[in-house]
Length: 374
Image (tube, rainbow, N blue to C red; front, side):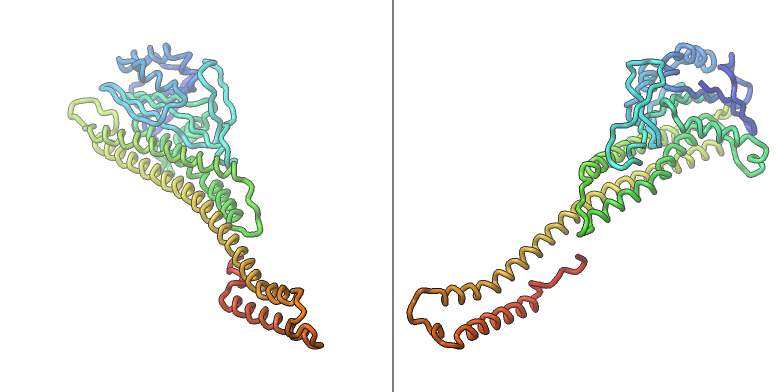
């Protein structure tokens, strides 16, 4: 478990949960899912002491569930957001071994980059001055953003204009945005792999054999599409809930006043725009894979049609020649040109002429022409 005290211009990582809330700023409590399962009574007691409320049992189950789709829920005291990530990593095992940091490679097929995408959910419990995040085992999002947060508090970062989160909601949106952008970093490799498969599918000299991997890739892209749709629905629900927030005079302000509230709305819309960009990219890849398969079978069908057309034209050329040969092969005593010295050459000449005329006719009609692009 990692505990951070974030205040204007400073970030400090604490060794343990404090007895009370600091006078300024807010707390970020980040823990693994197994760790939260074991320490939930301790965390619940701290939340009750700080905010006067504890997480309800259903929300605890949501935070512990490693198969839950992205969704948003709220109470009068806190909000809960479960957001499935699309990042490089491994998926967790089931909850049959609580407290153990177990992980296993995903059984997903397709390109290696798809097998490396971890869709484990990250849970957020948002209070006025506390943000509780529950991460899967070995979550790189936690490590990367924690390091980024600590580096942002340095004097050089502040001089460069780097701003720290002003509220737990702001911090939550920044983490979610980093999770979404993590997939955008993987899309170049994924696009390159699918483009390679498209080239193989459309190449007439290559026999494509990675059908199982391609089908697995299409299935995985469809699953990613569904995950992204859940992400978008969860953020839209959050934006609708955020629209009901307002600054009340005389009451404590936990999100930076009117300007801070507007900043939260802008950042929320930016996260939604990033998710829609991911949805568009995933659907485009899925459509490209489907189109490549259809074009492959269409090209194979056209190639088969070309072969049958050529064979039909050759059969049509040799059909009159076989007819002439069959006529002169009859066992009749009186057949014209049969006993003539030049009969053989007349027959051969007529057969050659007929074959030449038919070949020229079929070539002109492009029955024997090669299809462009083969």
